[in-house]
Structures are given as structure tokens and as C-alpha cells.
Length: 419
Image (cartoon, rainbow, N blue to C red; front, top):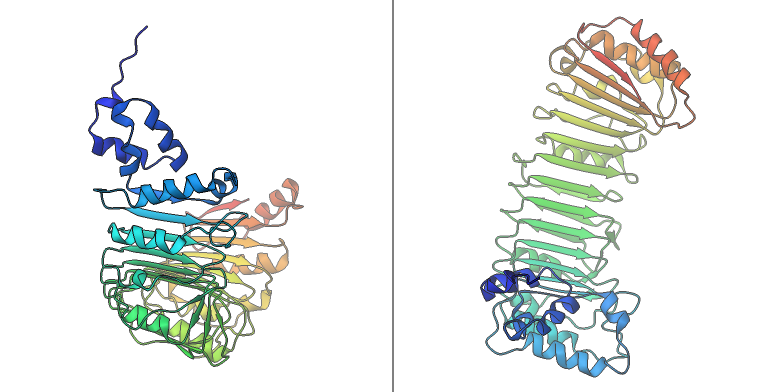
């Protein structure tokens, strides 16, 4: 039975696009299919060398591999590259044992007008300065694992839209210089980075839409983060609080996820005031640094997810238009819901339609909190209670549900779910 080879009838452009989704080893194997396929792999637009490939190399084939990479990256009349990825495994591409020309590979990719570079190396070595002056780059990820990243004075990444820096040490004011010369930057992330000799991280980017600051380590305890990003849509902040000064109103902010476990109440207050225009907020904060005063009014906030051990009626007065409330308690006190405010928060009276509560134990304090919410939430449609204690039996849940059904409800159409 003869099977027609329809795939080979596709144009070279389409076939190269298909090969780009294969691991480089499998793409090369297609060269034996026919004469048409012999050199197609050399024109693929996505080139990735990962740790698994490095682990399979031996002393016998290492030189052949180097020649193969040189030919793949420096092949004459090649198309432009969409992406070049180089990732370590158990061994490192830059460990010096095999004398790989990593800098040369990066430069070759840049010469081919690469749009995305993703480097995840434990021994980063010297970053080619041309990496920071490449006008074709749109996405850049550098996971340097403790290596120093120094940005040259003539840095200019005019088309860079996404920049992720991971586990790196940024020296002097290099990072501020880089940000200020990325004029169309839209997505910026610092993950587990250290900033040496720079007391101020200055993020001034008028087109920035997404910003992530997660567990970076400021060497100076007086480290300051200045954020001027008026068009920011998403903000993720998870680290020990430093002095954060938002310089713009962030009126476009749709989603913010804030996790603060250490720091001062004053510094936490500055940060929270800077995101007061957000529409959806996830807030994880300890009661020791939760700002009890100077809380802003979140007029635009529709959805709040609160993770921690304190969320009082007083805080609900700061979210007058809230529609969905998610409470994830690590610990809690029933007194937070006991007559602290005579005036009922307006969100309970007019807007709140869904409440979800994750709680470590189902007890009288929980019943008291739910009783307050049911008694005052006039338009509530759904109340979901989730016990995070796996030892809670079905019988106990049924007993609690019966207790809750006996409570007075201001909203007659409220559905109560116990999980």
C-alpha cells in the first residue's frame, strides 16, 4: 500500500516553521527523508539547546557538535531567527570544560536579527555588550544564577517589549540605565535578584503594562523603589517591604498581587496607597505591618482576595464597590467582626454578591463572622466556605451547614455551600 507524502508538498517556509517546534535533534533527523529535506533544518527560526542535549554529549562527538552549531548559526543566506534559547542542565554550557563559544553563539544569533533570546546559565561569563544594543530584540530573558550583569553606557534596546531578569546581580546603576533606554518596554520582571551599589531602583517606563518584583535582595536596607508607570495593568510584588514610591496614579491598573511578610507599617502604607485604583487585588500581609491608619479608598476595586490573619469590618469600609470577596485565613480572631463599626460598609449593603472563605477550622468564631456577613450583605448571591483542615468530616460539615441555615439572611436568594 502506497501512502502519499503530502507534507513534503508544502513550501519550504511552512516546513521550516513546522521543524521549529521540534527539538533540534529531531529536526536534524528529518534531513534523511529526501533531498528536499536535506538542509531544511538549517533554516529553522527557533534554535534551542537545553541541558538534556548537553548531558548526552560525549568526548567523541563534542567537536562534531561544535561544528554543527557553528554551521547552524552561521549558515550563509539564513533567514532571520525568531528565538535563540540556551539552558543549562546538570552541567553548564559555560563551565569551561568543553570550551563552547557561548558568546560567539549569542553574537551569531544577534547578527541574524533574533527577536527573542532566553539564556538560563549558571556560569554566565561575560555578556557580549552587543546584546544590549540589538535593535531586533523584542523579548529578553537572562537567568544568570548569581552572575553580575553590567549594562554598557551605550545601551539601546529600541524594540524590547519584554525583559525578565532572574537570579542575577545587577551592579551600579546598570539596571536603571537599561530601563530608561527601553522606550517601548511593556513587561518587566525581577525574580530573585540582588542590586549592589544601587540604593534606588528607578522604574520609569511610560508604556509598561506588567511589572513583577519577586524576592529581589536589596543589599542596602534603605533601598528605594521608584515606580513611574502610568499605564501599568498588572503589578506583582512579593518580597520584604522596602521603600516603594509610586509616582503615578496607575489609573489603568487591573490586577495587583501584593505579598508582604516583613517590613514596617509605614512602608506598607506607601505601597498600598500607590495601587488604590486597582480593580482586582490579592493581598497577603501580616497583622504586624498591616496599615491600620491612612488606608486609601479603593473606589474601583471589584474583587478582593485577602490572605492573612486579619481582615476587619473597618477594611471593608475602604472598598465601597466590592462585588467579590475571598478570605483565606491562616489564623483569625472573631473579635474582628464584633461590633467594631456601627455603620455597615456600603459594599455589603449594595454591591457584594459573592463571598468565599477558606478557613483552618470551623468553630464559633467562624460562625460569628459568617453571621455578621449574612446579616448585612443585602444582595449576596453565593457564600462558599472551604475548610482547609482535611480532618473535618462530612458529619461536621453538615452540622455547620445546618447552623448557618438557621442564621438570619438579609439576602433571601443567597446560596450557602460548604466544601
